[in-house]
Amino acid sequence: MTSEGEAADSEALFGGMVNVGAVFRRGALVERPAPRTVHALHSHLRALKEHGFDGAPTPVGLTADGRERLTFIPGDVALPPFPRWAMTPDALRSVGSLLRRLHEAGASIPVDTSVEWPSDLADPEGGTMLCHNDVCPENVVFRDGRATALIDFDLAAPGRPLWDVAMAARYWVPVLDPASAAALHPDGLDAPARLRILADGYGLSPEQRSELPEAIERATEICRAFVADRVAGGDPVYVRALAERGGWERWDRVQAWLSARRETFTAALFDESGF
Image 1: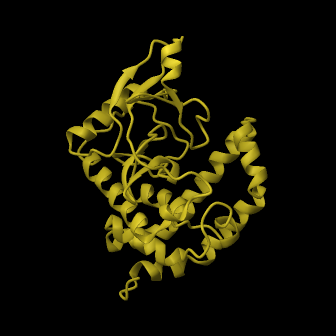
Image 2: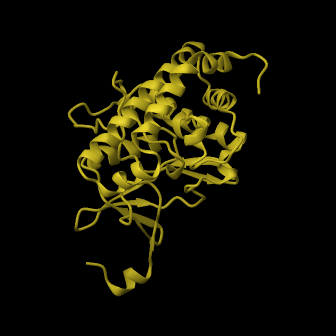
């Protein structure tokens, strides 16, 4: 139960689709529904900090009713429709750099294989490193126009670093057909050029660059299955979003658009002229 003093000190935090209306800031802390992997996840977040990554919340513990408590990270979070400041080339490059720092720290942290990590958006090929899997604009904190922290690790699961980059590209480039991109993103975004910027910001190797376009197509299929599962379960948030964003025809259009442009994206990733 929340006291009157606690209620007065509470601020609802918005963003994302899973925990709508259930995340609150209470002073220097955030309280939110705890994922079923909360204990393993909190251990991983503490280990990230020990390995020099300061771009994630620090776990504080659980409330008496089982909600997780994390440190609040001050800054700006882009909410849809996404503002132009969050979609600048420098902002995009910084997202890639932040993701690289997360992976460099996480690479030396053993993944607890006894945990049933969520498979919702996980890399189908698996991996030995814990990926975030949901690096969308609502889960990235900016300061002075640069990405400085990641929040909401609920869907974290073992995978390859490339998978996290592919997932991030879906939201940040975005790798969507123009009609779909226009629904939430500023107009005039050059997808091939922006994919190159994200790859450069991360520092993808030539081998990873050659694999990225296909990984993005696979990630899109996984995201579609994620939505389909929630719609089939009657989740009102996803049912409404699907209807408002063009239904399954939109997903068909996105997947066809991606497949037709795989060579264009690959060429942009290796273009020596730069952008």
